[in-house]
Image 1 (cartoon, one colour):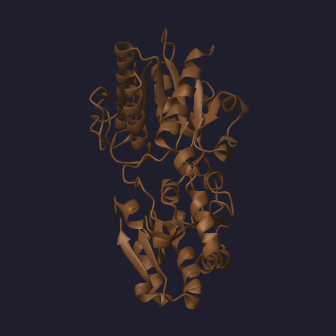
Image 2 (cartoon, one colour; image 1 turned 60 degrees about the vertical axis):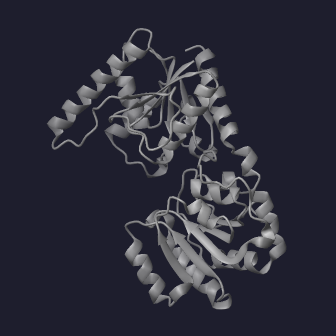
Length: 368
């Protein structure tokens, strides 16, 4: 198969990493792969030399509406020219916005390729308006659709769902350790959190819960790996709660997985999520995890009480109680650790790549 993956750029990020991992695995399996981008196509991830990168060089900021329209027209022309030159069997768009552009560029194009859209963002927080309506209508005309979670798929029309498939994120990070720290060797007093410091991740809720927990467990330390627009206010809250050196802000660390792998507990207090890689990677390290049962992904990763603990969103008391359970019940913590490790099989690189490949083949073999 000749398969193209389409996104704005290949810089380091969730969608870009998925594209690059899929590309490397698919060429290994004998497919011809193209990574198509709006920018020059420079990759932040290692690529097999057999993977072809096509940068359209049409990306950039527009100063006004006229310039924006001009850039859009330039993009549509470039996409149609690229399609005519490369003749891919299928294009997988890692953005519904880019899917709209591709469909517009190939409108009335004879012998156009199959097009599969992929929903990477959280549709519940998407803005309404003409553009969103066009994206939705265009999504109904694609040949296939990939959802990150079952819950996300339920937000789309039956017409879209009937042609789609749910494929979770995989364990694609190169930082995930090959071996897991033995439970008895874990630092039981080390609690970790990974993610941007912003309203979505609800670090205010986390700190308030940790303050309650810490009053009876002063030996525990909360390690936060991330930065963001709310960093200063969250640090101020930690000071107000008099948590002192019991909360450590490490900043954004690309090697966070290696730094948390021996932790005794992982906490995520998000108000909403897609399919959180940080949680998936913590589970792959065998860390007992606590996560809010938010829309959309955590409940599809964690079976409550088996592979982690799910708690209500913004429920400070419930989060503190869950932390207490893991700290005080080593038997429970060990069972959650073992249950979490199942993701190493269900969400392995090989398994998720296989699911993508199988679905792409299905779309190519189906009737329009």
